[in-house]
Image 1 (spheres, rainbow, N blue to C red):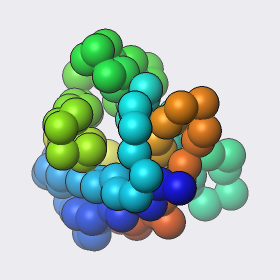
Image 2 (image 1 turned 180 degrees about the vertical axis):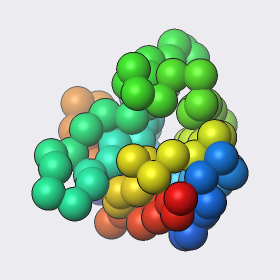
Image 3 (image 1 turned 180 degrees about the horizontal axis):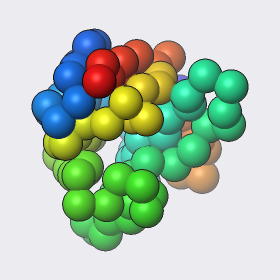
Amino acid sequence: QVQLVESGGGLGQAGGSLRLSCAASGSIFSINVMGWYRQAPGKQRELVARISSGGSTAYADSVKGRFTISSDVAKHTVSLQINSLKPEDTAVYYCNVVEKGMEYWGKGTLVTVSS
């Protein structure tokens, strides 16, 4: 089992920045992918960004150029730097890890952006 704990959410202003972090712990042998998803009120959960163990990254079109995902493979952590915040970034952000074919989720951290 893998446990994920997110931190760094909160209230931000449009145009500002926030940084989210996620730490994985437990029985970790080989993490394949770490990523962030978000779910806004009344909407489906969507992929925001992900990073593979090899460092390859992918981003949703809506966040390209504003969000940056990074990870520390040895420490089993993943971070999401959010710049140029927009009100539409308001959502619960979930950390996601794929480890040996199994998918794990954090409980989520709320990001609220005021205009």
